[in-house]
Image (cartoon, rainbow, N blue to C red):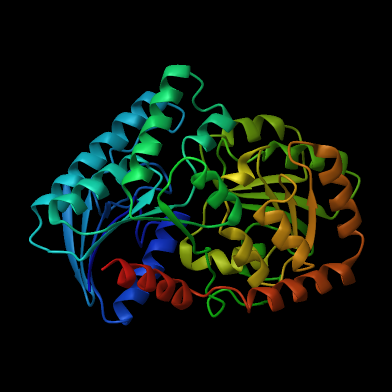
Length: 403
């Protein structure tokens, strides 16, 4: 089968959606399918085209399973919504042009959101070839942007919602990550929806000692580390960690670490000002992520109120795979909190409230045996979870039925 893929990130770009699509494509290639991936030049880490990739509007490279065409993403400051929308439009337009004029004759077109505009490009590319269109939703947009206040103009919201429904209605299948996301999407369209959850490569993310080179490099040896690892954006209430760090300052050997960056990092720095037990460490190379996650004693996943219904952070499964407990500050009854509780791998507390998060941290930090038990339980749970190969096989099944 020939599969045309439109996505915003792909390896070596470090975005979680890039890791997801790279794993799916590589596994579909191993199943014997031919693919053409249309994506952006690597830009996620610093919101600028990475060194070595500059100077060209498009680049093409061959892979054993097909080829990749990378186009310029026109990176902008994430806080400038108008500029970001224009950048998405420019990236989508070039991606669509590439898909339409390409000699590759696909049996299926597979596109990812966000950005939602790639759904329009995917539909048009599929329509031109007369083939099915499958739309993968990683975050439900514009719901996420509305909940975070990123967009508030009623006209902009109405336009985004119309675009969302337009794309959903034209997809032959919409794939989502959780039951909550499926209910959300099904309330907006009559198109078929299918749940294919995100996954973890348990051979890459394995249990390893806490005292590692990451701790040595950043002066964390012998400390008890509370960590948030990943994008620091409008969806994550990272400032709760600063509040917890202030409340737990009497615990001399506890250090709060935010490993990552993003549009809200300035606010986190402001909230953590004057705290000796709080550190912000830049993104690390992708290949170092298992070591970074293993360096923590406890991980925190904080999503703002309402966001856990529209988003499922893939970092959850990676944390469980390296045998570390999780405190999830999320809406009750949503995927992240449900998994943490079901796996007996940590605690789920209400979102946007520092008090329950602080008390959960205080309790867990005081009980090393419980940390170990939760880590072990989390690893056992995730070993039964979806692998990249299983997820690719599920996508293959969807594609084959449509064809």
